[in-house]
Image 1: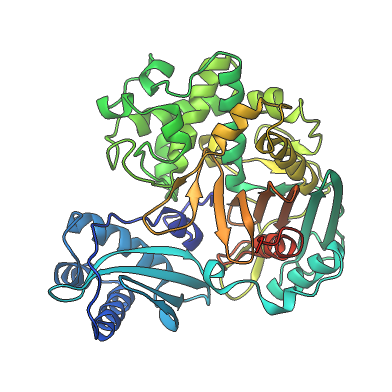
Image 2: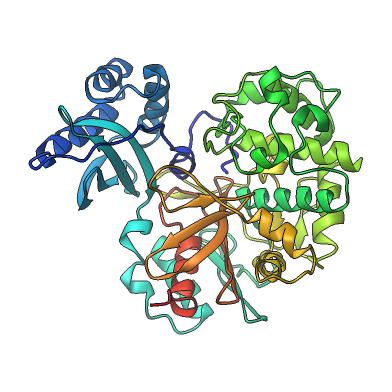
Amino acid sequence: MRMCSTAKIPIASLIAAAVTVMGQASSPQTGAHDGVARVISGLVAALNSKSESVMTQFVNSNLVSNAPVEQRVKRWMGLAENGAPFKIVRELEWSNDQSTSILVDRLGNRIALISHFEAQPRVKLLGIQLAPAYTREGLAPELANWTNLANLSAKIAKKSQAPAMGIAMIRRGVPSEVATGVTKVGGKIHVLPGQVWSIGSIGKPLCATVIGRLIELGRLRWNETLKEALPSVAMNSDCAQITLEQLMHHRGGIRPDLGFKEAEVRAIVGEAKSPSQIRANYGRDILKQKPVVPPGSQFIYSNAGYAVLSLVAEKAYGKSYEQILKDLVFKPLGLDHSFTGTDKLPTARPSGHTDDGYKLTPQDATGPMEFMFAGAGGGIYMSVGDLARFGQAHLIGLNGKDGFMKAATVLRLHSGEAEGQRLPRKYACGWGIETLPNMEPFHGHNGSNGTMRAELAIFPSAGLVVAAAVNRGGEAEPSPAMEAVLAIGARYAPRSK
């Protein structure tokens, strides 16, 4: 999650949220490839125009009408505003009713565009889905022959021009942690193991864990509705029927809220002073609005949905979300290098950096948005070692053993649903489940506050947990932290033949 005060939405978040409504496809006839190429080229041209009228004309002429035109145009204009101009650099595959193209955006980031078609009576687009290009192209060759974690960290930091990187791994119960680089670009102070990094949206599996623990304590239920959980909050009648499990799966229909203008944040905060008051204001703003799609009908990645879950936790436990996180997760797991937005952070830590495509600028994200989005990952800092230990607690449950939580609770939190038709990726309760060609499926989440990027991945069969972070923003895919996950997973968790 990017904690930004402008309307700019990161490409990584758009990828997470880009699920389209698609109908039943019919198989293309021989010779349809030219029609498909024409439609994809037209789509890219419409995106590059950044014109709502051009996009509307394209949608009316080239799409099967299975979703409102306004909905399509609004979604794709968001993609255009943040990534265009795009260039098609590679056609990866062509099958009966699907084509995959690799696009490069204006900053050089690679994105897989998966297009679905109906070919009769003429080729028309059913919908598109976006995925990080690495899910189709694989690991960068220069990262295949690493010798140890320190070597891998140095390779990735150099390749990505990150001032610093941290990697932690727990393999078959044996932990290791390394740190490479300097705290600030151009500086001379080196980062050390145990120092903290912003984890961004990895706060979502933390929040889902909090909800899971409150369910185990008997204070909440999986199928509890928002009206039951927040009885004193006035809300839209459709929001009232959303269940906690739907919210954790990003299937509540709550608006995404992937970016804000500064004036919008000020309006939400108003006269509120405490983090809980700020969250209460934000929650009322969210819940008075009708869901963007019927609850339970569709995956829509939503920071706002997890913000609501933090309010639910506060109501059920009677303390601030920051204190709940400490009481129910950090303290029981002995995570001594983990902090919330209300804590004084250690002085010795890496600085964040923004990336405008030309240079890195030291900058740390602060402000009320960290409190608004606490449940979605705002203002949370952890060492990569602590992050790996959190993942290890879930690994124990995924392998069927009770521990920090009951195995049944962990397994339900990790029970995924497909994010969209024909996409192998699933999303559970705060955990994405990724299936790649050369390694076993893994459960994880990424995070970004615009100045750092982090990744956590659990490989259940291999008994492997990987956590990584870099102190730079930017939207390149795979992120440097994900490259660490891919390199380690390919070596220690290869897919069984």
